[in-house]
Length: 358
Image (tube, rainbow, N blue to C red):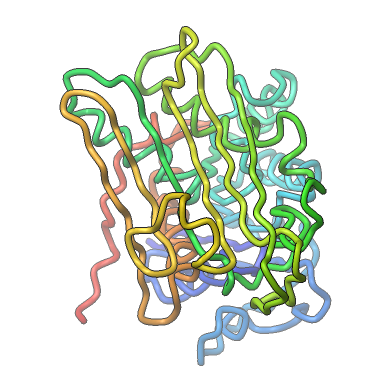
């Protein structure tokens, strides 16, 4: 029997998740929630950019989604700039007995040691009351910062450091909120958005660092973060607008999980809006962008992950990977015990149900 699923949030990730929910026979679409008035009342097929009519139209009423009684909700609504609202939405779904899989709020991917115990307990209480489970994931933080490094570490006799990296050109990324408000592109050098305020990077990527530490059986004593900005050499255009000369056009940030004074787990991001900026920073393994997992140990590894797609560039392919990870986790999350679930305690997802002849 198909799993009845509702989709909340039809942005970059949500619209791609919605496409799979419509086309994948494992799922029966029960509802779609949107925040934009322009999308209200539109058919789910149109919102997924498919030439089909599903008969499911978008609503902006969370109560209507809950009343539809889906087995699971895919939560891809923006959480970066509205964490309290996203947290309240997730709790409401769990209390109603609806399992939740999604991309936000990101701090729930592995919240222990990252957010306050009271906040965690409120989510756990909602899950217990509704007999529902929750799994938040993505790419980075997500499978690049938990599933893949842990799989490699399982073959090592010893590990002294795990480093995960995103090295990408974001010029084609069309999410203005992420680009301007979150990442701070186009800002004056030194004008730091909220993501780069003290402790924010450590919180945002602390979920990945602490989950890796738990997988390795070690305790992180401290998480440190730092950021570098590079100015645009002249005015140039990207998907979300014009980057003015002298404003932020490339960013490198580092989050380090320290164990006994040494960086045991490191997350590094190098984000450019032009490929020629800061050539001394790490370069991607494919044109446009890639991810990298480096393990220093016995044996040591360097693994480059190069997402591609027939329908878009590296940025599109990475978002598609996040959506796939989310949607393919639904059956295991529906079967999971109530509460916050993580990569460490869910079964290995194998892509069951995704095979399609070329």
